[in-house]
Length: 413
Image 1: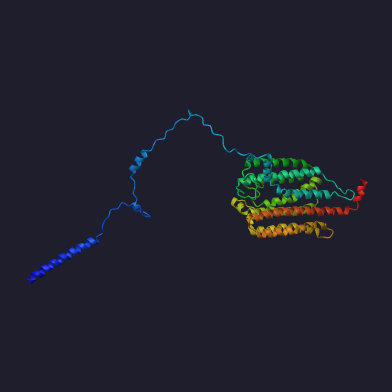
Image 2 (image 1 turned 180 degrees about the horizontal axis):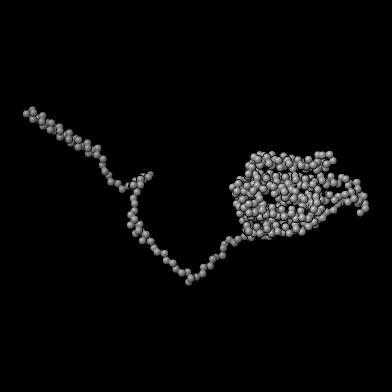
């Protein structure tokens, strides 16, 4: 009996254990709950992205409406209403505004570069005719005015032609300090600028041929050189300014050539060597002015493939070259004035020495294009003052010997 009770207890125990095990499995087994909430992930792998069959796309494409084209010949004409805003009269430039635009494009501020040697050469010609018996000398005013007109036409024409070809070559397209703005600012068509430039060059050449009769063959040769240099300075792909020859051209024209031309227009084909020597400082200062301009445009000229002397030698050597040019002009005057019995009063240009110091220190310190632009303008101002003081010294030097005879000559009149 006891053994049977034990067996029954074991059976009960095993059954209870099995029930407990099944209950634990039901408790630990996760319950699956159906929900309708959509869960979005930050990213989905490519394999999980649903695709649309090509057949469905073709079906959608077939449902697109067709485009019908109808003729508008029979429709009524459509009239536009009167605009509410009418273009104001300010946008229609007046004659005065056009004149101002053209004068700005001609860059008349640089005209003293050619006028100073004309003034100096004409003055030297007039002073050579002054004697105690003829204290007023002789001077051909019509030849002088004609020379100024020629120089004006040639320089302005050269500026316009230069702007046109710089525009073609991509030079100074974004430079607000350089060109006058006729082309870059869209005021005038490029071909119109070229036409006006060539017209002025032609007029200057024609007048030069008339006034050059008094100077002989050499004066005609000088005129031809000036005209050719004025055109080929920027014209064609092999322009003089793009071959590092601009400084040589400027020195020759704005120094000896224009000075000698102004002298020979007054005095004939012959000239003393002193006229040539006096023209050298003006040529050096004109080159210094151009060189400061080229230092300002080094970056733009290099990008456009324009090889000026400043772009070739670099900024450091350009500063050294500027220093040599301006000091060379003063050295020539000192050389002419120091010897015994020399015209010492031609040392008057040394009064511009403070301006010279400012120009040199500025070009040595600045690196910005705007700074070099100010140096260029200061150098141009320096040349004007230098030439005026030189002319005053020459006039006083020529007037001192004839001062005692001036009252007697006036009494005779």
